[in-house]
Image (tube, rainbow, N blue to C red; front, side, top):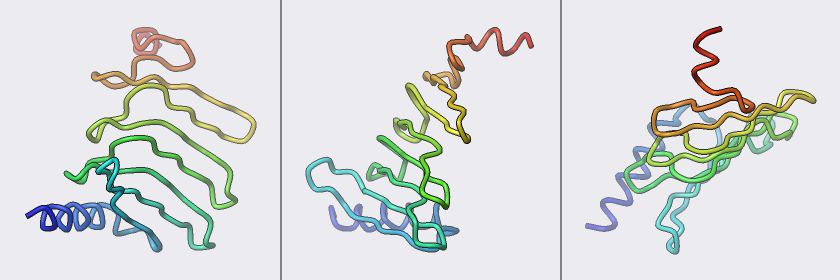
Length: 117
């Protein structure tokens, strides 16, 4: 039964990310999370992160440009962004904080201020 659940979870993860050309997936027996690494067409890492056995994004995820530069870093909890996320674009860096309701703040600006503008 455990193997069937693991196989189902891996198939769900594969179905969710079928557009990625190259990927590596494996179960971390210690954390019980599926570790995933995706690659750009040029062979550089595109994303790294983990899924829970239900196939939902869970844990830290990092995305990279085709040139290998980090473009985002943050965490998911059961498929939802949560906590501090950092996004890089050239020399610019933005911090976005997520809570259970979605975006809580951007670079210290509260969500309510964003809605007013």
